[in-house]
Length: 421
Image (cartoon, rainbow, N blue to C red; front, side, top):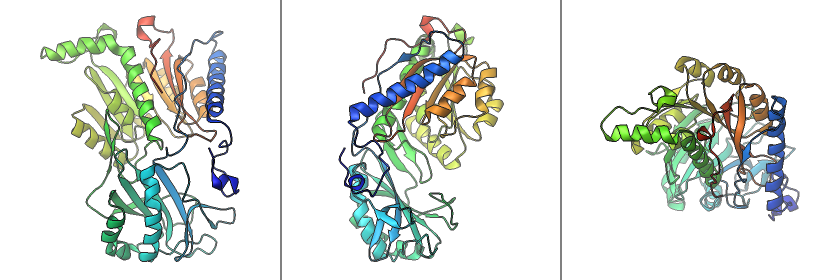
């Protein structure tokens, strides 16, 4: 990928942009495979039997659904992009990674900064109001725009000119102000003020419609994110096909949904821990499954509940810490985890000591993934796939299915099925 900002030595975020994309993908796949297979060998398996699906490729450009733009410069000439080593603004508004809907919103917002008198925050002096702009685009081309401000001083002017902003950007669905009064290295503050009737951005993923509120997490690469959720659903289906079919037959006959004898005649219990807005839970829900999502963010849980209700999906979502909630819930047949970069910590030991049968682990950090797998010695990885959520960088997303030892028979494990990339 050619990038004028990299070539001009202005931005170094895409550290591998000068490497052919096929080589990038192959290198990531090989690195994750080596790490996981080493972890499997260390657990006593002389010949790890991880079945690897081919890596899921991304588009090389125009794939990011979110732009986090630090605002610098002056009121008459604001910069939108990143901060340099001197904490002054560097403009990278033309970054080739942004989806078209996101890219199309940047220049009108630059004009709006001047119109509404949103003085850029100057980090060295500590003066100014507007710290950053956060834009998120939906698959339908709608936008969520968030102004991260130091105080409410500019709020009245933003409200005054909202009509004109909506004329300039008719595809805006959600507008909000986030307050970040502190001088610290974080992207946003805790308080969010919505500036319109819409509270969430509708993310139509084809199979499931998610709803993103301003502070909700969603994968930054929509196409690869959809591939990740569908892969999870496929693997769960292959694990429990017979049980799901039997339960569906019972439900069609008016009986209470139940699973096969392998679950003692009860529904399959599936938890989605660190569930965010419910991506894994809503994709994996279905007949004969009792699905529960757990997430610390109350906003995200509200969004997940709204998505489930609108789609008629039977799933429960609760606000809470994943480990504490797991202890309260008891046990499950399969647990999906999608933790932050630090991994699942003490939850790994709890899962290992539980009666959980399978773990579906989605990781953005192979190192913490390997550490967590090592802390679950009763489980072995049996299926894995790399999803290139972050092209041109060293980062990647990996989905791994772990089964409790001794490994279940062939009928219980998903083999010889491939999802297209």
